[in-house]
Image (cartoon, rainbow, N blue to C red; front, side):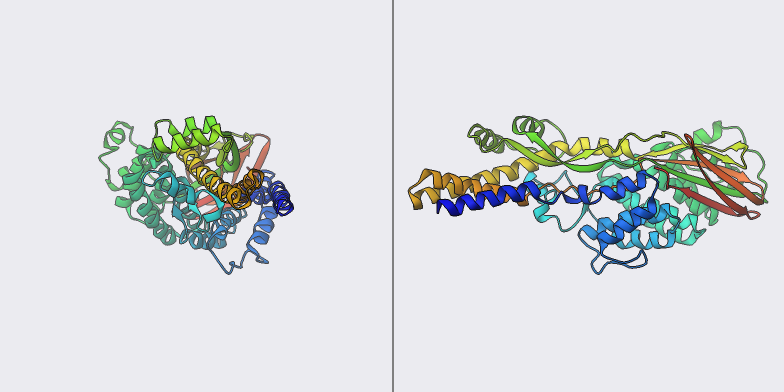
Length: 456
């Protein structure tokens, strides 16, 4: 009996030391490749993770980890300019996404979501869900497909309405999607809907060039929105519109968004974090008492939970967009994903730690129960203690934090916009000492959207 339990304990220790690093480890190659400006390498790695030979193939199953991997591949394909396949992957993944609700469930329920033993369905934080439609809207615009962009804008509107009603803190994340939706409806000829979206972009996030776009639309069509009517009235009249000119919108994606890693926190600090006032579930007084009791017995020393970590500081915080090597286009930062992701996580971190503690308590209770049964059956305290440690250790081995997160998202997104003459043009994006160049043939009265997202 002693030898059997000892062998089991040794095997368990080996398993704990050599176990899988989770999604944070397996996705590291995606992040590093994108940061190094090697999206082709990132694409090869994600195809391997999906167990498919090429980007044109979908995996047999699109749920679980594959839902998140499809989001990763969609982002990588967008950086490579393969927007048709990117749209397919975004839309396939979107059907399988569920949003985590940290406000209406208990810590025990939430613990089932954020730990690997019950994480088959990927539950996305709100900012990731909102960005699926935003980035796919961009895909359609880059392809010149206004009708497809309008359909995606309507999907975005459904999520926009939900988060406006359930989570006001996420409104700033909607601003860029609203701006792109406004652009889509404007170029499609629906000025009324376009104005509403532009007003959303101004009031929720002050997206650069959004107010100017609304002013030009107002001067041309008479459409307005009461939320920005005063600002429009205060602006000088825009220059007369030259109908032969084309509309140019440039989007630049910079840096890498934060990602999740497994973090160990001493039990004392964890209890403080899990009982501090804040939104979402916290430890009940009974759970706090249990945690302190087990900590005093030495059965709880630390908790393991999914911590959001910033990527290495980006080399760039701003982008300069230059037309024909002489005109710097007006624009600026439209969305700071990094700051909003960190802020959102800070709001729920106490809830996640509480969930981790509740699950640790469950393990400690199971370990004590096994200890008592084994001690009684064997009449040996040592055997009972070892059996209890084995149960608790085995549960720990399979109860690792779910570190899944959308790691290939950019940290920031910039926009620039201008009216341009018909004909051939060169557009340069300058980031520090790096430059990316694209050419386009502007059509009279047409519109063009360029996306640059391979420099992170």
